[in-house]
Length: 218
Ligand SMILES: [Zn+2]
Image 1 (cartoon, rainbow, N blue to C red):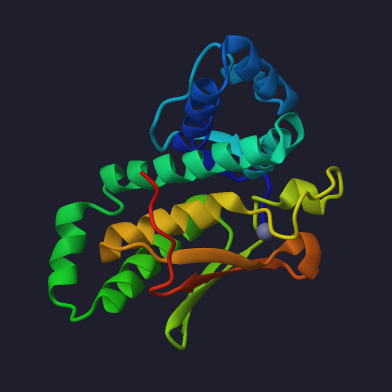
Image 2 (cartoon, protein in one colour; image 1 turned 90 degrees about the vertical axis):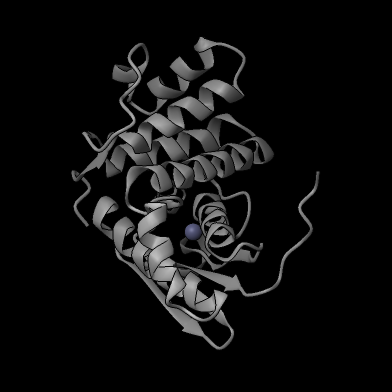
């Protein structure tokens, strides 16, 4: 994968906003950006659009800095919120325009068919936007997603940071949970079942457990 590939500005803008919301003042955000080598954004938030704004390598480094600077629970919360906002941004951006997707949904019989269609669209879009392969397929009742060259654990894989858990890629877990709940109208669990931090492969594997979910807490 080309690490110099430029990612769209909305990727960094969403991280920027969530870190600003989760930390008490501008100083924390500034330090995190500095540690990630992204100080050019400290006083000027990037736009929430597709303008090329940072390299994949910089994005991976920013995720690594969140792991380093915050504890496991804080980092997980930040990653989950980044993912949830990332998905809602995509639904507004036209990639998953409601009218277009819902029209396609109407022709489909079951919720599982809807989710399969939406996931194919979404994973193709992510492959296009991020440049790394996202492979989505069915496995019995469930679905599998393999993310090659997964950027969410890349800094840990490089060996700079000791992994806190065997599975660390919270952004795709929360992103696809949100996406599947949106398309199906009900919650389904997504788990990272195999991560590059421990599997020694070139992909992380995620499983969507169809019709398995915990209650949403008030
Ligand atoms: Zn992983």
